[in-house]
Length: 312
Image (cartoon, rainbow, N blue to C red; front, side, top):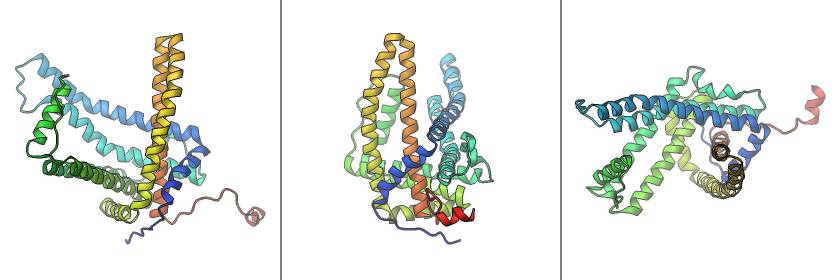
């Protein structure tokens, strides 16, 4: 099936971010609670996935007779990461689903976040996680190319030392600028390929590989509006972080005068609210940009025309 891809003007990048707030504002409690639930579920999944690695680390520390052919620390790190890579497309599909239903004015609840598990698309969505693995492989390739022959070994030693609480000097790449630009490009296209593929599989029932390819093509054609959206969101996040730090710091200070535990609780709530707001902007922007680039869906009218009201 041929996939229709629309090219949109650069000004759309700003509209996607501002309109995401408009859509979320129709049911702010639902949208924010859905984003928080998504974050919580990802955390729970990561914690459960870390259990086998934690057991191995405990066994290796308690009994040196366990001569494992690998480092338990890498299991502790890699298993949660791999699990999240394949689980997050399911939760991201649910977040996009909630935005779509709110935008269309259809009834939806917080459990709409599990929409990715319904409709027989779960395996297709999970397979989109392979995009991140491919991007990681490309990052390693370009890191070896631009970092130098010893950079990877030095970086591995730096990470292992940090995990043990020992601080060593970070490695320096031979071509830092090229390595940074390659990582930025890979991250951009991996993010857009994954997110728009999730939306296509969830909403349009497309095959994952075809959806990923279409997402990459759309990202190239619409690199200007996507760049504008990214810059607007980055500036908005920076300004929002400053405001939250000032307002949240004041609230934490006032709460700490009452009780130290209360201050910690307020700090946690402010942090969760900030993360939920970032997710709201991000997933709202992704949904709206998918609608403009891949879908023929029209935004719902704020008020039905008078003749429609008369017919009803």
